[in-house]
Picture 1: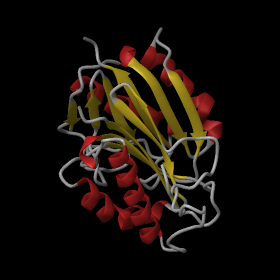
Picture 2: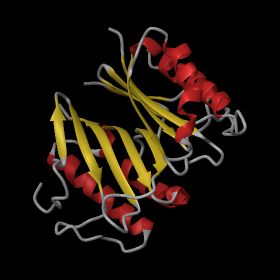
Picture 3: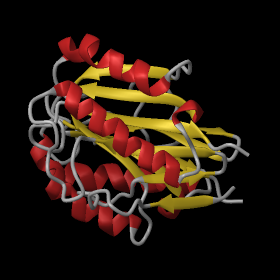
Picture 4: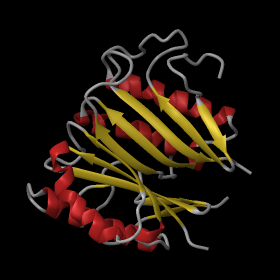
Length: 129
Length: 121
């Protein structure tokens, strides 16, 4: 089985020793994404919806670099610093995934690695043959 | 795996086809006692050493790890443990998610790490 590290030009340099995604055979493992720009600065201020939109924009770039689209995503894990934000970000998920419904886990966490980040999302996708 | 604590209804790792799913590793010894005291770095050293032992037992290595999840009770410990990650993984960079959590399954534990790896052919 092939292992391929994926690093997307234009996305912020990973803040620890990891990369944007790793392909393992036909699965693509996407690192947890927070709403930061290419310089690692928070995007969306304290607006969780704006942050979520940016997270999915970055995720689209990572999926694309791994040869996948949102329809290929089989699992997402969503970490929110305020669980009450769940209903607010759900329309963004509907918009992004359309008719596709991935498996999902969503939990609240006290803090994320980037100060001010209110949402972090990771995913696993099936690489099309 | 011999020497690993028995904390819950789980295995140290499960192989599924060509991939190995490693259960969350806590800084506890074979008797279930906390290792590293209150030192997040010492705890992390132990956790990543354990990960190395589990990977090796399943014919895997750090170079084959595709994903790690790191759970910290204090997200400010992230920069302190990053050198350990660099040393263990070397030139390999896995996908990663790191979040803070309010508590882990063993009192005093400040870090838990799980992983997915490719099994060497």
